[in-house]
Length: 183
Image (tube, rainbow, N blue to C red):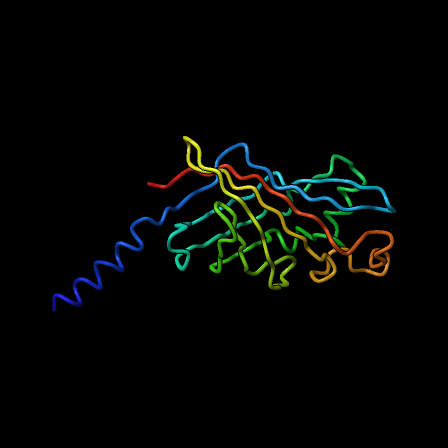
């Protein structure tokens, strides 16, 4: 009986240090690609991030991001009109994109790789997101990046936009998320 109690106590101790974090103000989620060889950037003004992370017990780690696709902007009205159209994000039909991971590995101190599932326009594919963490008085800041192959998700997949010499298939995504620890 004492043996089982000790095992249960050790298991509980392993999860006691897990910390849950929620996104706070000042966070950014940006993307960059090219159009006819010219680089342009954009951002999502509305997204939410939840992180559960204990570097000593990554089996409990989780990262979930929800992105409001209606909030995409490049500060170019014509381009933004295309992004909100059926050929690109189609946010009237697919208002939210998500990334979910419960497979986080540490690659160096404060550096991680999250293998998960990215869903855009109702299409879910395996995706990898790399990030670093920096603790601060408020909680933590997460800085990360990923490469998204837009055509895998039907983004710009019509005959007019499929040509990768006009718009590359790979889109760079970067984020800086301010996180507060949930008590």
